Length: 432
Image (cartoon, rainbow, N blue to C red):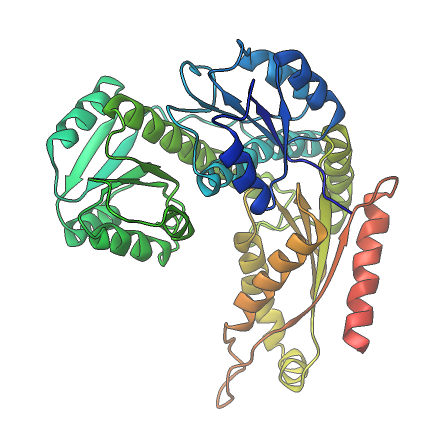
């Protein structure tokens, strides 16, 4: 059975949007096209669409009206062509399909994180606790510009400065990494050379560093040399500006990337503040069993209202001779706080990690289908399985592996029933 459309494309014809739609469909992001604003609003009412892409050459489309038609779901809007000031991202040309997917995913995850913050505040308020509001960082955005500059560097720097952005120039990969390790940046622009090797080298290095991994990257092409845009986006770039892209548009796109990234950090800090509320484990940030049950119910209600999927995962420490010996000697108990902290830190900002029992953890993953949830849980288990824990004097360290159970909350099912189903799947897996 074909999957439901995920992206609304508003275009009066297929002249400029056809290639983008075909590319999105091939990447698994099925599109549905509306020829006019009325059809677009009808599609948003009928389908759980995740984002909209608007061809600016179409009849006048009111971005605010589209967003309102999707409520209570947040609707990221990408725009190409003339206009688009109210869109989340505006470009002159249609974006590359992989680029569109990356930006949509970033914007959707950011919206879901905002929703999770509001839900978490409500859950803590039920306990008489307060989660501080998200504090906006008032400092100017900081952008690193790496690579040998040319005439466009000055134009881009001026456009960014006029918007209140601070830029730092790094002529070589070495100076770029020196700056990246010394101070914080909201985005980075990498200037492409004839072979783009230095820019790709910097990007690869950043993606191997956990602190730098999420900083958005833009590749600014110097010319029209051969380069695979699909490969560039797979390497972790968030945006690519062609050589003839106007510096003002490039600056606008960089600023949008930086603001999204900074907002994500602000929400993360606000959610982390919940650790000090007394409702969560102070050392790990994990939800307790009762708080998780109440909050999971609230998450499920929000997912139903917004017509988004929701999955739950259960991770239980798997039995092994090494684990049994560590448990008997009390070393497993000593390792569990570190394991819990790793579970808490390895989830996305919008996910909810919890401890159901001493050796059993759970996750609530909003806007996530079952297969993707299993991948996320197994990734967490794999990272922890690579960590050696102290087993006592004169004994080799031990490792901890997990049995994983996953269930997607189905229509009409309570979240508690889905959690029970995940636990049953876990038990069946452990007997296999």
